[in-house]
Structures are given as C-alpha cells and as structure tokens.
Image (cartoon, rainbow, N blue to C red; front, side, top):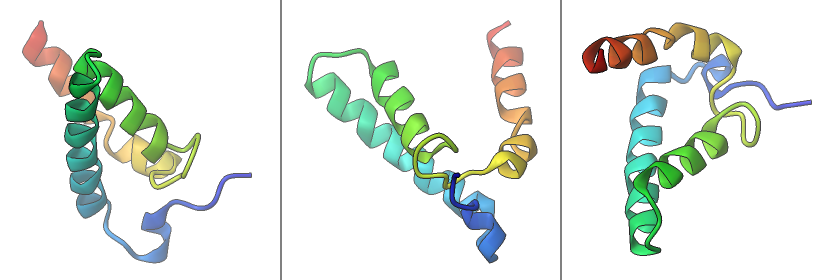
Length: 77
C-alpha cells in the first residue's frame, strides 16, 4: 500500500509540483552528464515523485494536473 499523497496533509500541490519540476531539471542535467538523453532524467524524476515509488503525488493530484499533458500536446500539435 502506498503512503497518502502529501497534499492530503494540507500541503498545496503547486509548491510540490514546482519542487518536482526542479528535481526533474536537475535529473535531466545528471542524465546529460552521464551521456544519456534528458528524457531519461525526467522519467526518473517522474517515477520517484509519482504514486509508484514515494507517492508525493497521489491519484487526486494527478487528476487535478491532467490538463498539463493536454496543453503540452496542444502546443506540439
């Protein structure tokens, strides 16, 4: 069983999202330093912060931020 998301303890999800983005950028930098694609660092940060490992973001948080991939896809397309 996964621990409850940090937003259930009264922490806002937006500061958590900004910390996750900063960790993702740092992980991408480390991946580039290891001569790997940046996407590997972003994926590693996503696995670490997602509900499958540490559980910083639970299912309610992921549903709340579901507009982000849709907006990114809109910019790409």
